[in-house]
Image (cartoon, rainbow, N blue to C red; front, top):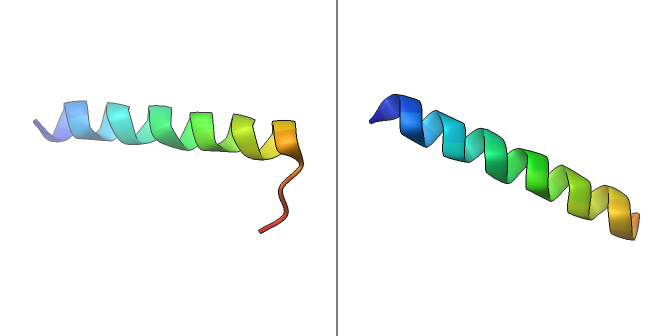
Length: 27
């Protein structure tokens, strides 16, 4: 459903942000 998709999207964004911060990637 749209709700599940939104939750997954938020998790992916959070994970991406953590990875970017961890490796100090500047995009």
